[in-house]
Image (cartoon, rainbow, N blue to C red; front, side):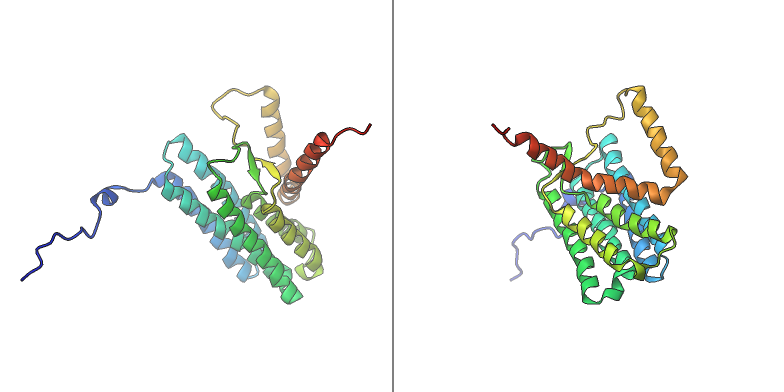
Length: 252
């Protein structure tokens, strides 16, 4: 006799009706594209293009979340897609760029330094995803992966602009790579800038400071960007030191 028991639908109608929001995921896809483009350029020896592509991916990554919040198109799919895109653009791509540029000549130590960065980026993203609901929105715990990627890519970009070859800076490159990776998984707090509301009025000095930053970046992009992210990557250590000194009881 034929089986007359009702079978479960192969496709859930509710899931079929659901879609994905196009606009924020377009920005995420663009960020993923430039991360992949950076990898391709590094494999072809175009390290300056690779570094610039990582910075472009960082800008696009910063836009997708804000676009989603402004258009009220946040979704679980978008959050997961953004995290996977970040792993490619700010985890794999910077590690491969710095390895191909400077670390490949160090043998085992070179790829270990690159892997430390890549693994720390993965751990940083996993911790961020699991603590998103309980963490203080004003601060990141550990250096954000886009900032770490900008630090590594900025080092490559500015050193190439000064005329240095990668094999001349193997040890400084290894230090920057490991420092960026380890800083991502520390517990130090870094200001997130998420409490800045673009819809509210701000003092004139804030607008003037933004104009000054744009002028400085446009005057010498590799040096200014690398300097800014160096300062940001050290800010968490400085903030933690200041807090520790404040908590230290005064001597009698």
